[in-house]
Length: 137
Image (cartoon, rainbow, N blue to C red):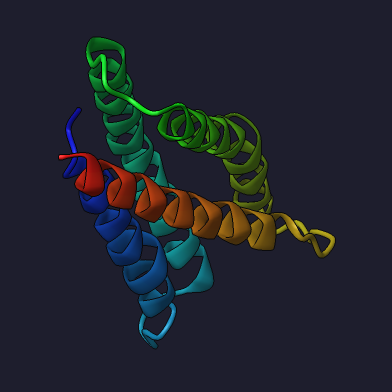
């Protein structure tokens, strides 16, 4: 089992989702459209990183004979969150950004907060995975 990956991944979430993304909205020289477009690129790129990490963790679990059932359950939970984020939430959020770019008005939505909740849940699950993996090595 690759025990450092959950910690690395949790750190990436802190950097990308919890620091860099909110910080970009503090700029005064970029338009909202530019900032939203940067967000699309950032999270589109981060998707590939996360898919790579979940695949590496899954392969390490499959190859290991000493993995606890709780670890597997937590890993499946992380995978389900990723699936929900990248198959449902991000396309819906991208659609909203595209409408804004076209000058269309959009109704208020809780999609962004749902994404934040999913991201925070994934972060907590990764901390749990890292703790379990650390105690097992």
